[in-house]
Length: 505
Ligand SMILES: Cc1cc2nc3c(=O)[nH]c(=O)nc-3n(C[C@H](O)[C@H](O)[C@H](O)COP(=O)(O)OP(=O)(O)OC[C@H]3O[C@@H](n4cnc5c(N)ncnc54)[C@H](O)[C@@H]3O)c2cc1C
Image 1 (cartoon, rainbow, N blue to C red):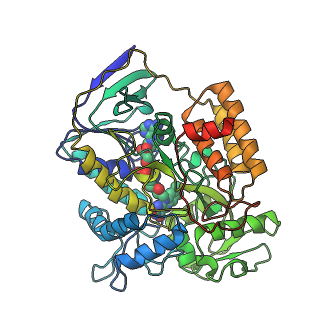
Image 2 (cartoon, rainbow, N blue to C red):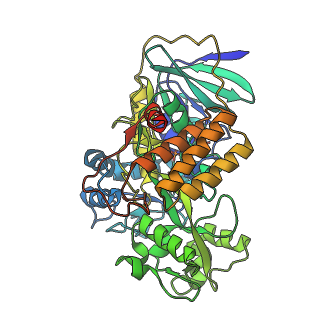
Image 3 (tube, rainbow, N blue to C red):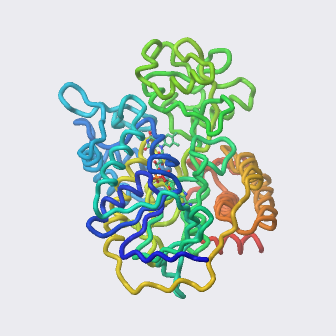
């Protein structure tokens, strides 16, 4: 039995910062927002700690921010999109502040800005030290709840897209407490976040399984740079799933990375020391741990007694696991943190299938390239969420018919997901090679034979195949068997059909 909802306006899947910014920007068009959970839960946006990067300081400029973003992207970022994002960045922060996001300010009312890794200026606007995501999302939720044009379904999960014979998207399949719901809409925006939950060690909510990306790929949308996964170098190594995170801001404040003997090791890996780009720090932490020297954050001298006030969330996380960071070292390990790749979009958030848009972490706008600059994803979610919302709000056209047979996407059962997470962490983690990636593709084949083409398996296949095909090391992708960077920087632009065909040859 299928329940059909006809909605005259855009439908947005996901209620993180990207989804809600899209919903607000779609005004006054009637907009439906879908989330599997009550607003504020199950979204990585609420977990962001460091803050939101934008050229807000007097000694800063969008061009400098763009330069840093392009450097981090290691040749694969699209300069025009980066220029657009960094130009619109300050206004995006100001409009979130106008919605009530309580950014930290100095006595003159200017934003207090942190310096984070690979930024040439202090430009990360923060809230309450490390509470940026929660506070920003709370302000946006408040605005969305009171906006007359927005309605919510807070108990439904996307399982597929409804398309016409040409592939144009005109609605979605939802699983709502095991009821199948078809929603026909004018414009579908996917804002389903990242995929860290597909890895055994991750900082992401367990719901971040790349489902929007998988569903779009299964429908034939082009996917960009799926092999580029950012591993946060300083997940807390405390056997918690997800792993709590020690944000870069801690190193920005002067905390150092040391081994079990208390020796600083980052100067051996990069002249930028602890503020080197994330992938360098992650590889260094991985190498120190692999060599059994251990890796720890030392905030005793830099923060000491200031720890609880300066980093309340991290302090509480440490305390829960019996660590007092005022007087003790914090054990750290790299954890899957952010997906640079995603559904290919243009500067209005439009995907390659008609009627389909994507924004936030599930999209590949071309901003991040091979590596994301710290604290730029909240900004991307706000700027491109807004752009996608405005573009989807003007979609019109005949409503397409609900197919006679409902699309029942196979669900990956818990044991299949656990196996996939182990395999991805082992074979598509911080350091990769052809042997591991080939083994991973075989494991995905076996899981697909057992469980069908579930969205997480489609996503894992895209990552594994693109990582195998990229015979170089660049940004977040390091191949032990191809440690050098290729002379030419080439983005991966693919569809699910093309890697599968390559795998079969
Ligand atoms: C611990 C941590 C710290 C971070 N710190 C920072 C930081 O300081 N600065 C920064 O810029 N970035 C940071 N990031 C990254 C940033 O938080 C995310 O990239 C960003 O919030 C993504 O926003 P989003 O709206 O795309 O996704 P999310 O906020 O994750 O929202 C996704 C939404 O989609 C829903 N969803 C998922 N699957 C489905 C489905 N099948 N059907 C329906 N709904 C679905 C989810 O429930 C959720 O509502 C951090 C991330 C983490 C995990």
